[in-house]
Length: 402
Image (tube, rainbow, N blue to C red; front, side):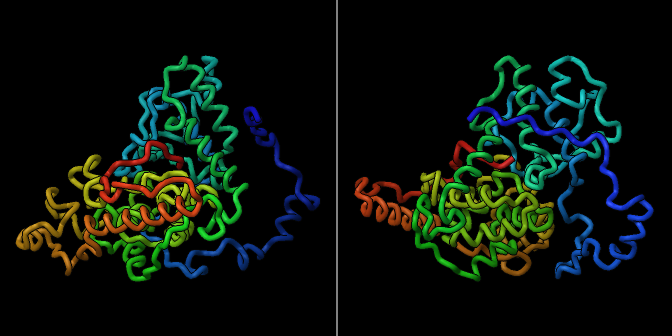
């Protein structure tokens, strides 16, 4: 198929108005925007956003291209980028630069350029430990062709001394296209039934457990903090998406991945049909990834990145005074410690909705049985053996979300 074509450049001038003059156009639409303009959130049935809610970045093509080129100017970071090694507990923060950078990687490669847009500095570009460009790709603010060719120019300047797909930054673009291709060519890609690549697993549909997960009431602070960030900001780091998806499906609750998919589709600012469905099948071990015994520990995984629980304390202020020793398992804190922290489990913060050890083992056993049924029905292999013990925090080596 070859490389994608170079993106078409922006128009050099605006087209003429559809009436004789701009004054005539303004008169024609006068009053229309007042009654039929962009509706407020309240008009659509949503509550108004709080001061710290909403995706913490500016939208649009201009902003998207600034962010793209600011990220691509970080050549050392790009060279070592490996998606599984990024930090899921890093919140959006200012991306600092020690000196001005050329505004286009093509200019970087050629050794020229006049420097970046002066209105953009470290305080206007905030980013987590990944590029956070997925919303700009989803809405077409940044062309994947532009991303590909400008990233290729940066990689060419590194003389092969950089990470490689599938975990590299280029690999993330490839994963995006992979899901687009598979989604376009697979019947019923967005559901389990009738989907030829999706394992048929007898998921449950427990509305009470699903609501606890969706509303940050599982009793597992790492899971609840991530779901709070999702609702408030419309974005999650890919490993946080891994953790909450695993918890809902094959890790603990055994709830249908389609329900989680619907939540992400509603809440994520970068929600994308092909990527969202593909990732939920991947994380539930319904397709693409089949090591169902590798589970994200809801009380242990985040400790590797944030031992003091600063991420949890930010999104769950009820736990802000809980000692770090107990921040991921507050139910293990002595009652006097809970009272001193102003957070008594079962009163101020919910107790765990399931016991992870027993729930995870039950999930693994159910999926093993479903896999065995699939293998026997297709006459492809003997039933699986010795896979009933979950392995916490072993994560897949590949991931797709930018």
